[in-house]
Image 1 (cartoon, one colour):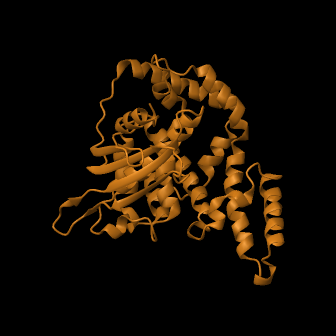
Image 2 (spheres, rainbow, N blue to C red):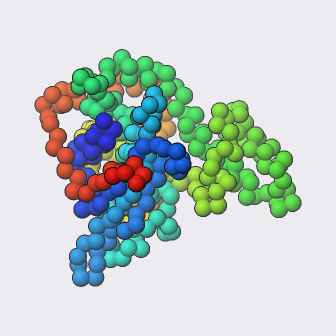
Image 3 (cartoon, helix red, strand yellow):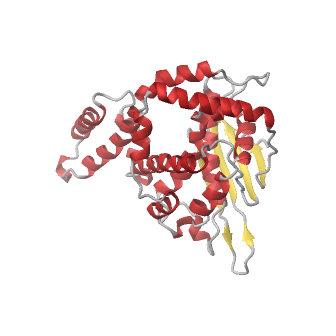
Length: 331
């Protein structure tokens, strides 16, 4: 159902993959690289004769049908990587260099797109429409309320867990060469965890793979900037349209404002041009400061509205793409 829900959800947002060919390898298996990712053997671009070159996209997730809870993790990964794919399928510039992943494409710019779209999975309205049992019955709001009560008071720890990586890397790279010893690195990690998170992290800082991978060093601050933009962009959509889930305006707006330009424009510029504000953490902190009771009240209203809409609407799936499902060599 994860694939079906992704297809229906993105189609309801009016997202268009512009004729892209998508190869999805979504199941975990022995020997498979243990992370979700997305890459483009062919970039989308407008050729000199004006013809369109659609993208070819491969992306992967790690669903394990025999593991309880794996489906939710795989769904989030699927929505995230599909967001990357939608973004890069819609870059309309006169060279493929505008639609490749390396500089001047920034981490924050790329992750903003995927993190915005995977954020929908946590919305009560999205769950009302797409989180259903085999009989088609939506998830009861009582379950969503329990989730909010058990997680929202601690949501700030996600923010601190993101910040701690960047602050550690900053401190690490500011050390003099003769200070860089295993003991000092371990001591520094403990010190930064205590300062930012208030104690030792349940996920040890040095277990974060980005820190010890040369191509991903100093990468993590991009996630924090992207998360700031996600909340600022969500705030803009909610203020303008009142809702995000199944809003047919979302796809066209993202395409024009964030996607078509590729890396020809800066991340901070496109966020400011869409939202009318410089990038800030205001929308994110407002979400964190929302009381549990206010959040439950707001989410319940959005849940009830979607239940009503779901009885009235049936979405056809049209994403303008060719899709191929694989499990390794098996198609």
